[in-house]
Image 1 (cartoon, rainbow, N blue to C red):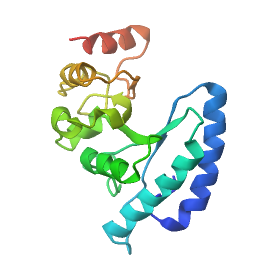
Image 2: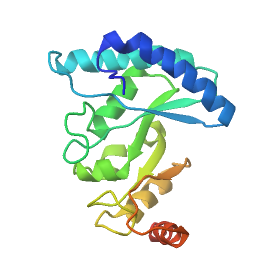
Image 3: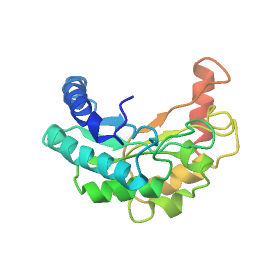
Image 4: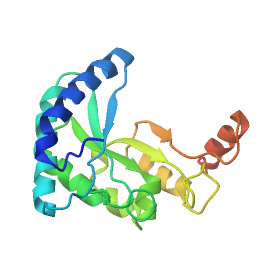
Length: 191
């Protein structure tokens, strides 16, 4: 992963973005996902955020008119991604607002958000239009929906009731194998 929090990585990342946009267009994929990278020693939080924001602004020029958008994904730093720079949905949305380009939004991962103690209604209120893609998994374990304690159905229902009409990706570590397990995971989200 190329850390977007380091301005020295900008040109390499932009080159990769251009290549990824070409592949996404060929495949008909409307959203690419990017990660901010780790919180870097030797750089202030403000310097890293500025590097990330400026890189995304230039990246928006590559995306413009392509039909492909980019979602930056906040990740939890409590369990899975200790040391990651962007662990807050609100800060992710603030960065998107700073970039101020329609090509740049976020991936809202309900699992990561819940692990960080966020409430969907609070962090997405009035900014759901900046969510380009949604991921779901349950906690603990990042396993299939219905295996843990996250109120995934409630959170998804709120997201859809407030205007989200994009895709929801099942991004989990399965406990049970097979198509019946996938059907059960999907059914648990219908509540």
